[in-house]
Length: 228
Image 1 (cartoon, rainbow, N blue to C red):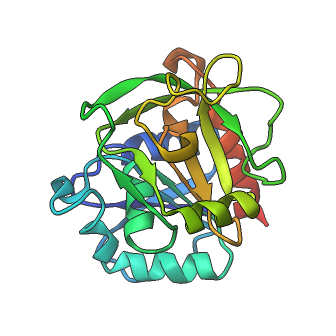
Image 2 (cartoon, rainbow, N blue to C red; image 1 turned 135 degrees about the vertical axis):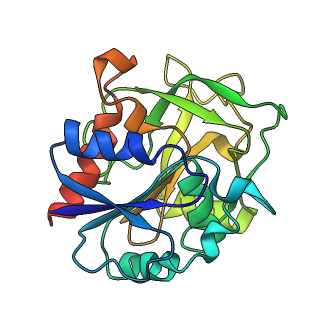
């Protein structure tokens, strides 16, 4: 098994992703530059966080048009697992691989803290341990997930809301929502459920010394899908 960590100019979480995959999960992973046009030989793709192309135009807009994204779309269409974290989530939405958009936080401030997540799609392999809340860090200025009402209805009906922001009791309150996302959405899935976009950082919660190991729940789900 080999995982591709996509590198865009301005991304700053690619090393975090590579470390979590190779040193924690013990899987083979390597960087793939944004100008590449193929993902041949890879079993999974990780789009990391950061500020690709300096977030010019809109967050993720320029990265979504990089040559590698055609390969990522083909990769996803074939059913292979793709995870986009923070900026990676933004890129997946801008590329049309996931629906909706990530807008400026409702507070208009950069948010950097730990939050609680609840896994909503209890049938997804991404959520290997759904009987407890996950504590993960967020770090973004444009993480407010938005979609129109028909799209939201489809996501809810098809169980494609993967994670919601909640308080320590598991309730999706306004106070527990760090960015004002519609319906407290923190992560969504594509129709085949092999593509996950999520704003919180599982790769930054992969060891106790980082404050939480809860990110391994999501990363292990990614690993399981890549092994199939």
